[in-house]
Amino acid sequence: QVQLVESGGGSVQAGGSLRLSCAASGNIFRRSVMGWYRQAPGKQRELVAHITTGGITNYADSVKGRFTISRDNAVNIVYLQMNSLKPEDTAVYYCHAAPISFATSYWGQGTQVTVSS
Image 1 (cartoon, rainbow, N blue to C red):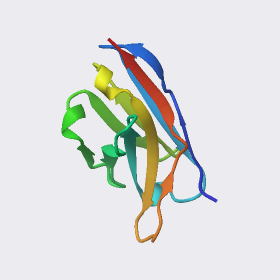
Image 2: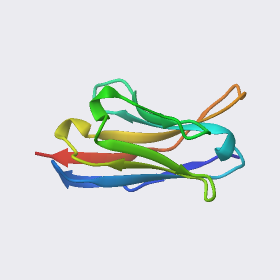
Image 3: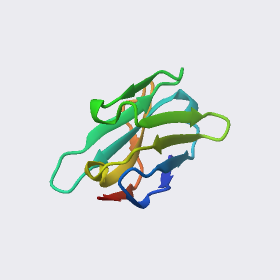
């Protein structure tokens, strides 16, 4: 059974920082592309960043230069360091695991990030 458990969300003022963590259970982490998505009220879920098994990263234009995704394969955790936060970053952030060659993928339960101006 695969479980993704996010932590690290909260409320901060604009310009502040947060670090999200996603701990993955099961044996898929090392062979998965790991990603962070977010969904703001009334909007569709969107990709924030992802990192491949080889460490190649990709970011949404809106977070480039402010957010950093990383992974620690020794402990099966993916991180999202968020700096210079803006009110428009307010959303529920979801961890996602896409195992290579699998027909399915997995989602965490989400963690709320609120940025006040």
